[in-house]
Image 1 (cartoon, rainbow, N blue to C red):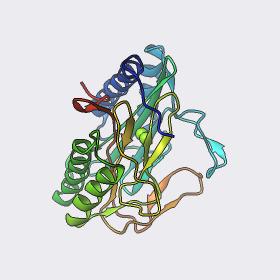
Image 2: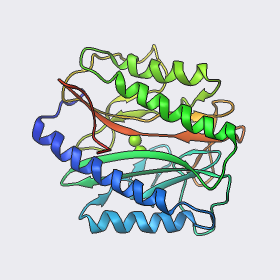
Image 3: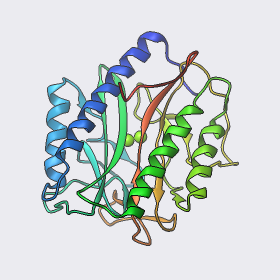
Image 4: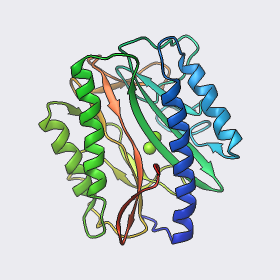
Length: 256
Ligand code: MG
Ligand code: MG
């Protein structure tokens, strides 16, 4: 069942979304050559605590991993698609890209958003990967309207990304969000005809998150049980916003 949130609940999700936005803005400002992903983790954990919130990812149990995720931030560098583990040994270099993905729980309501940024100068093909992935999210958000169906969102991402020559990661998907981090529906970044195609209704809140590989779509999970990487080693980009369906169109909760 896809939960529909009332106005009071949407305001709470809005606060969680804006907190994640502020954290990601801070982190984007920190990203530079020589910074470690552990530095970014420590800043994230501090900002969440200072806001009186709880990290949504730290302690999150995954059946697939069989363990709890130990960090507040997923920091996924270059060929890492999602769920990269922060480390004091991972120093950013010019030409890298890093996906910053974090979540919070504030007064019982979750926020979740992600952005991928370059470290110093990156080449034109990498710039295009970031641009196309971000644009695919914006186009999908435009489709998050009452009366449309879930496949309108999924198909919009798929068409835009593949027509630009990049590939859609299939093993990881977006999700509903509310009083749990991951709620129904699952939101693949492609049309999955075996899946359900519910009509979108006011009050639904969707975390839409295209994950796009520059090369082939296949991923594998490293021996740390969490870090998903592009199998062919190509760069991978990831952007995410949480969007409420309203009578007045899409409301992006995770930006002002
Ligand atoms: Mg998410
Ligand atoms: Mg996320």
